[in-house]
Image (tube, rainbow, N blue to C red; front, top):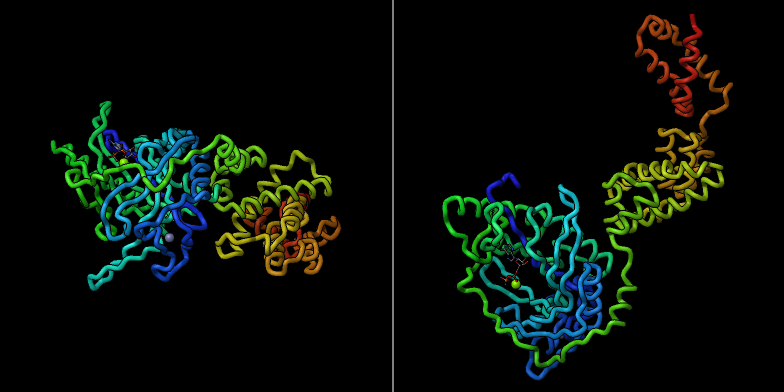
Amino acid sequence: MEKNNKYDVVIGLEIHLESKTKSKMFCSCLNDPDERRPNINVCPICMGHPGTLPQINKQAINNIIKLGLALNSKISNYTKFDRKNYFYPDLPKGYQISQFDYPICKEGFLDIKTEKGVKLIRINRLHQEEDAGRLVHSVDGTSMVDFNRAGLALIELVTEPDFSSAEEVINFAKELQLIARYLNVSDANMEKGEMRIEVNLSLKEKGERELGTKVEVKNLNSFKTIEKAILFEIERQTKLLDEGERIVQETRGFNDEKQVTLSQRSKEDSHEYRYFPEPDLPPLEISEERIQELNCEIPELPQEKRLRLEVEYGLKDFKIIEVFIENRDFGEYFEKIATELLNWMQHKKIDQSKYFDLVKLTTNYLTSDLIGLAEGKIIDFSEKITPENFAEFIVLIFMGEINSKIAKVVLKDMYDLKKDPSHIIEDRGLKQIDNEDEVDKIIENVLESNTSAVEDYKNGKVASFQFLIGQIMAKSKGKINPDKAREILSKKLENIQ
Ligand code: ADP
Ligand code: MG
Ligand code: ZN
């Protein structure tokens, strides 16, 4: 995407997040994202009937403050609400209560990962507003409106124009999504419209300081669409500039069918919202104490957690770290196992210096075999295998009491039968044969009944060695440690003349 070397790409985002609250922003109607019946959660306040008065939702304000703090913003002690006036069928009041000049949070930032390292994205502001209703267009040309969503608490976040690629935008959006979920401030599912992203994009000649004319792109309902829309706009604007045309400042929408952005409205007919202070609400004062209290409620956030997983458990594979970051329950399950490992290590007298090795073995079995048993899904594994049993299982493998082949059988039984690994090994007679005499006997036996393979090996056919190992493993039903079998076999072969 940066094959474009003539122009710099400049992108800023406007993101709406549906705040996770019990009731709507200014009335006591339920916020129920699962409500399928239209116009159930409505009342005179959110329908804008004359004479009704809005009331500020405390939970919503706490949510936006927490998000602002997590994004390193300044929280204003004095804020107010403003009316943003426009007419649209999904807006029963004829205006939206929003914030114009005194947003609750301002001047934040978020670090994101890029190809070239960490990049700081400045956040201009986060302000509180309310959502509009939802229009449903049917094929016969009629349209209906559902006001269940009208008046839900909505957080708007505006970044500075600090992005220069689709990748950076997506990394930011994904990190924001994680943070919102960790804070329990929003579920932020793009597909459900709980997180809506508008992309502002312009180009400027390389090295030029002044920003070019921007175009705003809406209707982006997935990360894939965002990427496509950005690539499309870069190409479209590049072509126009190359042809000496000027970019028109406008709002465009991404058309899923045609995979292009299409003009929706230009600057000339852009809205004049005639903002004015909301007369039905007093200014909102936010005390330092309240901010401090909320700050204390902020849990460990993804960025800190990544670092901790690295330091505390020696995790190096960042893909595995991300699995634990994105699936918090799974991450907690892993951490419980890692704690149990310490107990087992002490019990089995395994040296502490081996901890990271055992942890690595754990992450391997968790992210491949265990997820495999759940058909590729990450489920609540603690229901299937207790962390204590899983840790024991790992210790048994580490100590060579079961080999990797048998481990698969044991894990499956643990998963299906909820038994602990030592019982399964006992019941199924799967214990590794480590009695020297017994191992010796099995290998002797194999050598005797495969004299031609032995001869071939002696004559230089290397593959015969592997064949003999196969025979030994089969004869012992996989219960001999393959490394041990190799060691003894090569010794024995050396002694054969
Ligand atoms: P407007 O007043 O047109 O809404 P704002 O200054 O409020 O513009 O910015 C809206 C969004 O557009 C912000 O995310 C901002 O970072 C971004 N933006 C502003 N100017 C540019 C530009 N020249 N190119 C790309 N993005 C821009
Ligand atoms: Mg704006
Ligand atoms: Zn209501």
